[in-house]
Length: 107
Image 1 (tube, helix red, strand yellow):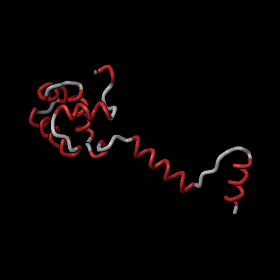
Image 2 (cartoon, rainbow, N blue to C red):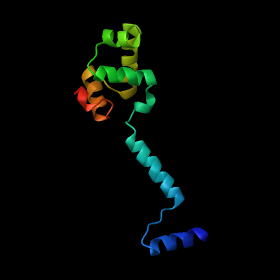
Image 3 (spheres, rainbow, N blue to C red):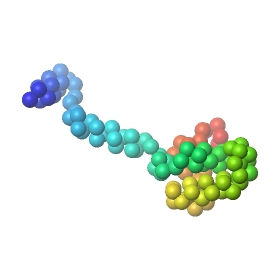
Image 4 (cartoon, rainbow, N blue to C red):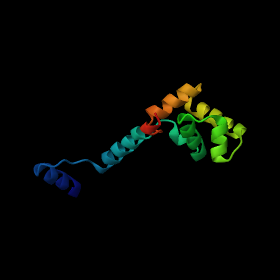
């Protein structure tokens, strides 16, 4: 009943009223839309490797930068591709651009 009065007052004063449950649902949907699809499935290291691949670095360059082996870089790349259902480096790059994972100065 207090909730109803608050809603009526808000609308009467030119404001809007959103049910708290609806507000939570709307915020959850917005967060879901704003989070690049698949990114939540990637580990921090995989995301780092994806960004470096998108920056145009080779596996040996990434390995040197991250102080890991080339095989480890390739394993991360395979895991990224599997998790995101991508099939080649070009798709990885396109995904990173579309999801805003790389900066425009990289392009």
